[in-house]
Length: 161
Image (cartoon, rainbow, N blue to C red; front, side, top):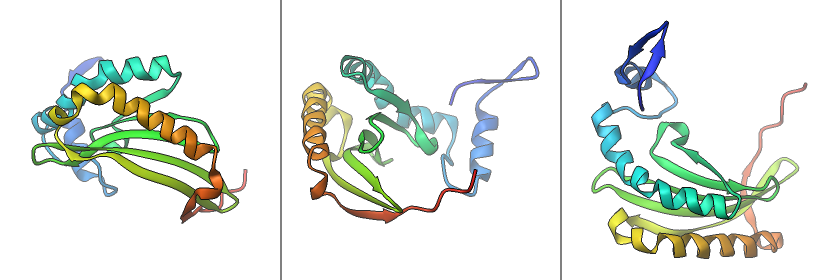
């Protein structure tokens, strides 16, 4: 939540934080200082995540739905995801989620598991490259066996073009 520019002038991200508080669909509701405290562990891990993503030709996204997270993803159907996201603001603690999903008609099927659950960054940061590699390999195995996926959800029909 950095600075934003409006009509040639700079405004701090306070405006953005105020706008987030007004959003009905969730997202960040705290102060800029709280956001920075929560995102700091991810920022510290970004070099490792960026290096891993580049080495394996994965896309990386950050802070989806205005929540502190990093996602490494690839593929269309199946779609593969390694997501490190905030589990609890207390601490804070983090989850590393592995998910392989496939859309079949109007249904989505998946296989998913946690490589890390409710841990502070200090508990896993030194092993993160190995954990990511193990996760990537696990996802490849799952992707090769879509018959082992379970039903996840119904998909809304796409609007006509």
